Image (cartoon, rainbow, N blue to C red; front, side, top):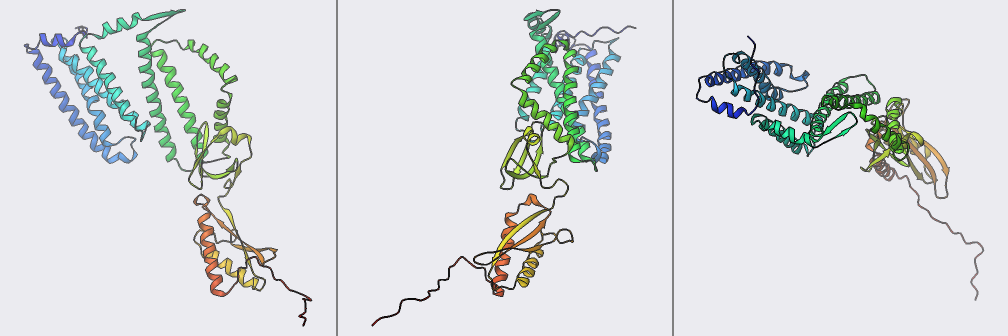
Length: 429
């Protein structure tokens, strides 16, 4: 027996007409059975997810939130097909798009929350998505959707062999937005898996993340546009305009993006490196496709275009090793025992927890000059955490040296002049 076609026009009117018929009771029974079946299956699946939750990209709550309407949608659609040959199923025809709308809203909201974490505008976008889907659902069940479609399609124009209308533009916006959200969500999953990978160079990992995100976004747009009937060959004109723009006003922006990928691929600068660029010293906190974020030791953040890192000299203090030196000049009087002073300064330095103590990197004291007021010495120490700064380290070492010198009577001289008068005037009667 051939199934009757489903009439999707003005479902509420059809439902009111059959409200006194026994067929409505069959549909209510199907809805109750499908609801109980979906709830029971999600209980079983939820227990399984709870055991495997550490390795799953989504948790038990999200599985229940999305799974219940999806499983209910499957069972209701199955029940509708079974009842349709012998009964009117207008109630089930309403339930199917209702469950589909609910599932779609929850899926898109979940994707948004994973893509735009800690974003204050996420609630606004969730509200827009929900209203758009519910309005489409309301137009569908009331039979107004074809009317709105016809009105919007009349606002159109022809371009060669292509027909463009307001309805097509709105449809393209919705489909492309969904495709972009899906692409970003997939990129987020790939990024999470790559971040869990051990043994991979951080710069290579970051380059893969940026490349995969870009490719997924391009693929999503290229798939979404033909899906709504837009021929992507018409984008060739836009591509030519972009090419002209890159040749003139956008060449700096393009250069920054290309430089960003070069930096990520050659791994000359990595997140966490201590660098000096453009007379600024700090830690590389972010490597983005257009700019690099440098966190200076005073807490400020400097945005440096990637082209600057390619075209100018960059001092990477932690390219092969993160160990850096700190120099502390100090002056003692000419009456001091230099061997005792040197040993004391080295001992004070090695007592500090941040100072390295091994054969390759150890504290050293050097005599640098015989000055006017005293002898200049320089204490050199090595540290492995330059991102913590050196100001506090120098202050703590200087204070300890000052205390030990006072305790042992070692003089730190200050500038002075000794005046000796020779052949002074004699007193006359």
